[in-house]
Length: 353
Length: 267
Image (cartoon, rainbow over all chains, first blue to last red; front, side):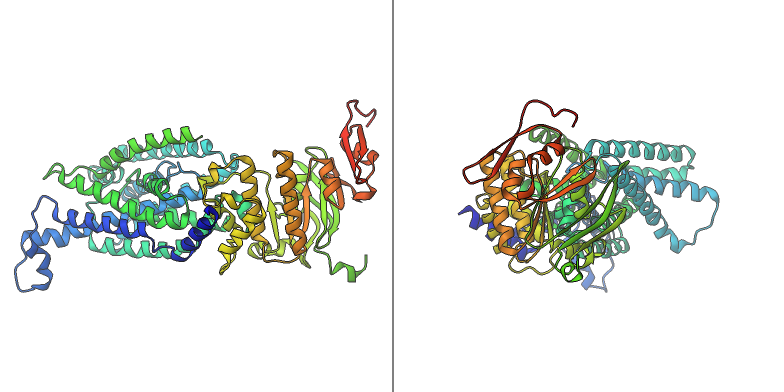
């Protein structure tokens, strides 16, 4: 009996792929969060404000202005960044075959933030004049470079230590985090007042910069990443067998690692460049999914994105409305949600081992 | 060896050496024909696993030539190679606790289009005595159950292929004798039905003598013998392991050996 059921569930997992029930459920939850987030905030919004796009003749009310130019891009941005973080977390954990791996914990986000900080302070200090059109891209590129650097370093170190040394990997991450923190601290020391303000933004994390162009760019990036990841998820499942066995079943492990590393670095780099360091979502989102529906990467990856989007949207909305009119940095709420969960996770891993 | 014969070789090693750490292993020279059952014997650390890694293409040759199915081993694309040879590993761990169905199905992950996957997973599981494990999580299984699932994965990988190569790295050493026997039988049947050759690293001399038609001896990193099983004598085995062995013959005429307590003098 159980054998037949297993075979059937395998078939259904292969054929339905993305279109399964948890995806629909989480999408509904996400829509609900959108709805609540759009109505909540310092400035009240009326139904008329929603329809303002179709009434060009009327003057814009403050509610309509806030809704369309500030709030909607921000909540979409929050959801997209959350999805990006969930995706990069799921990929990192799959790549290192380790449920504790997370771009933040391993120092990838710190590397990106460090490169961004260096760019802000050193580039500005050097007096080189950068065209305005480039400024939008120069920080993401620097952050990307920082993230790639850390990823490649981790990959090398992880293999240079024993093949599956989890402790070695996490210790390397801690060392890299400390190094990045030291460099960011040095930058803070050297920075001018104006630079200091942007540095604080990067280290605390904020979604206040969300705007329609950013939403568009991130959406394109995310869609491209999803399209790219679609072909990698089965191979990443094989990686769970171990590197040697994955190669035996026909996976080119070196290529796969390179691809995933570049992708994770790209995703982390962009999210860090535009909204600073937002921790814990990359760790927590894939884990919630794994606990509830299991570790199959083909389902884990899309669901981790949805869960990441929901968590960050909820955290950001809370950050916006809990102390109106002031705004609390969103990193505080993701950490408030994430830290207890992380401790619970460690306990369960310890019990399981 | 004539050229006409050479064409039928599944795998041939010609004076292949390989580097691992500071040591050089080899030279290894032998050929494997389709359907052959070969056991590799030798003391611990002699280089048996290194030879297997060489054949699995985890290590590349330092010198010499390794030809697999008329093509140099190093020129094979990994997905193509995975359809002709499979490796049953020594360790069975899988990260994250994947479901058993998925682990077995991963044997066929390199196939782009695989409509019969579910039925092959089912049949492979049955052949490996693992059908009752389908639907469970891999990390909840016992050692013996994990071995069966890994075996089913390897079966699934070479299920619809003829004349493949199955490399086995003493995966059953930690299992109880009854299970070892039934799983070895499963491997023999699976391979015999499809003309797959088996090359197995074994610690158990008796298993090698009873189940395999040819034995390759490895000692101090080099190949020291390549015999058809009936030609293997007690002194050859004693020299290989550097111990005294006692032998008995069963009613079926098979030799059974066991180490005797005194150490061989001067060996």
